[in-house]
Length: 508
Image 1 (cartoon, rainbow, N blue to C red):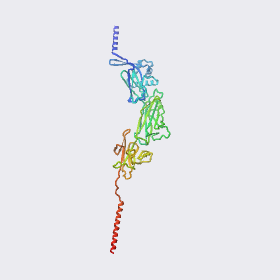
Image 2 (image 1 turned 30 degrees about the vertical axis):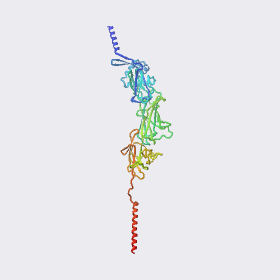
Image 3 (image 1 turned 45 degrees about the vertical axis):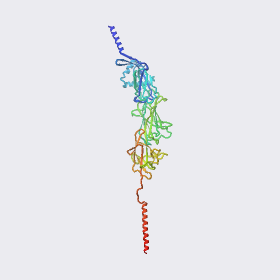
Image 4 (image 1 turned 135 degrees about the horizontal axis):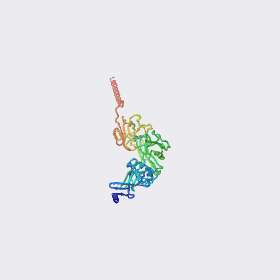
């Protein structure tokens, strides 16, 4: 009987072995494709892989079974993170990971993040690394010649540690990164501006996770276009001669977040170009690791000057990294504030003859004295004016010919989009002055596009034609014709008198 039982057991074991196929992958035969969250650019990032377990597969009918073996390099760290004894067996460690639950739950994510933090602070060797990625617009990275295994995927320098876990086998494996690299965004409180106005700029960022880094660079660089100048506050207080910094305000977005450091109150201006500033937040970011992932803003101000162009770009970029000699700089975030010209062509009615000497005033919104636009003449350019709130001048005069050959003979620069009224205050000699102001509307239609309307009609050439009429001499009284008739009458009366006297003498 015992022999029969042993024989049956042996037969069953043989049958099971025949129906179970064990797959042992050749070393270095697997591929893993890592993609980014939201298609972000990987330039400047480094992706590190830690192979936590070796893996083999076996098939039993339609079922696939996975057998994991702990990688000795990470055994102690795994036990520590899983809160089990350091000398735990392979089975114990695998069971502890399995007990975390289904994929993508909070416990699994915490395990991945905790292991990453330990690996960084302990300087654990990585299994495979991409090295620092230098290509532009790279949104995925492929790792080839990998051994089959259970891998942790970590991208360095992210806003926070959010590592990914994936089993890599003979089939092409894919994983999407859960974290994003540090970035900033910039906005302005105005989309169109007038010369002399102050623009408030806000840069938004978040505290990055710098776990495992002894040092970390986090510097915001800002560059103004030639139509803008840094000022110290919303009132437009100028920086003054020889000043090398500008006021900024750094604050957390959420009111309940306590600042663990001392935020800088000024940014440094570039010595060669006072329209460039650098704000070093490295020490502040390091001091606020308790607030990692929390959003903050940086606020500062710029004033629109007489060199303003249609698009006044303000660009801010972030330089970051754990090696001061090998940092990454993000693609600039732009805040565009537009200012517009108004071009007028003063001509004789029904012709293209340009008229010299007409004068105009421009009003915002309505023809009232407190709405008049103050201007200054551009030196050396007759017929050209810029908006100037500090000027006492409000009148602008046309010239006899085209300005710069562009089809107009009066040019005003530095207006915000909006509704204006153009009033003729003096007509050219010999012409009739307009009786009513002309409604002019400037409308922003894009970053570099705008329209100009006269009344309700869009001027496709963006030039407002203003016609003046002239005519024949109108009738009047008391003119030279009356005097002539009076003279003729006197002569006739004188002739009659002389004739009468002559006839009288003859009769005597």
